[in-house]
Image (cartoon, rainbow, N blue to C red; front, side, top):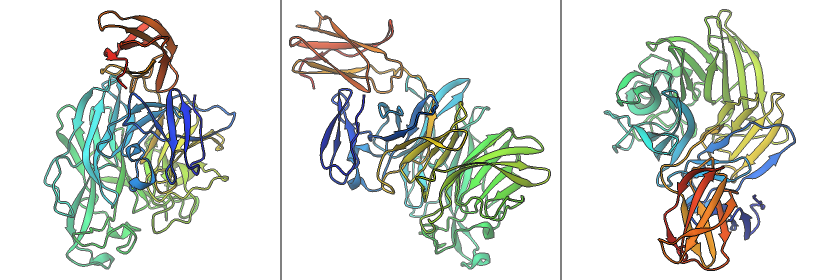
Length: 503
């Protein structure tokens, strides 16, 4: 059960299960909880029509560069929510996080996300955490090496924020950035200039050992392919303090024994062979090695993914930004093409955009096909998520912040079942017991116990789970309380015994 209010309302308290939502002037409305006071997930502004949407939870990483504009604790966290706006799991709020994603490792589902520190050039330094379905951290992928940063600082781990793709071989593909000297005279720059060499590493998940790396600079890709000039927004001026971000790798995928690499700043996606040789390039502007249905088909794109690769064809989708912070007048869309690898032609398969709600996304974004034939589009720097039907019409729109103030690098809808290794939380206040279990997906009911001592607890009642946090009203004050979480008749977990005035 959830209610909503306009973000322009000055102060409103809304019931959400047993939680509340608060809207303050100039801030997007957010939820609060008694049992988890540090959690402040956004309230979704929800639009749905009567057409079917896919099953699954919404995984995203809301964050902002301006803490004054939303609740301070709503930031820099990975979150799982329902499409009705109920919180399921709230991650650590200590560091920025991106790319929360359910993947397969050793034949079982795991949850991965990047945690680290970002920069104003769209890169970051951190590690990738992989947890199991109890939220126990089973692997921490930490890329180390002699990386050069623009400001001379060092970091414990050098995984870039853009990619953490687990392969069928038990490896993970992560991006990284290195400040590198380069002769830039071919593009009007200095002979002793500096570039960001955005590259990827393939790392063995279990040993953290690098098994493969690839650099576009070392591969000899021409600087002339870049559409980001020295004077373009945040692309850099070619000095050590602000290296030129000529390539900007933001997506890598293992597809068979090959690699699909996406470059935002060359408007291109490259297929590499197993040794890193470039087999072909599709350029959204002029086609590259392919003939496009029309020029400037995609620009500044994210989240390239390939499917059904054969010797003669492949399908690729992109989040087609069509914009940067210095060039943002073209509508953003989700885009899917079929490439004929023999004839080198591209055929347009699908375009997803909402004509009633044109969006202009400067950065970030995701394209996620769903099992029921729908497609989920996350709009990156614009805090919206839309689900489109196979006919291309929008069926759902979720908004979680003010435009250009709140963002989520990528957004997904996925099936995820988890029972945390840590216990549920309970607390008492007067004659009310509050209960929650961060990350538990399968709780159907709560059973409440209370008594005059820790050793003499008896069952006081049962309440059906409704939302992230529930409450139970006692007939009389209980000095001590405890709750149990059930999935039907199956006991999933017990809280600690707490006092009746512990909230």
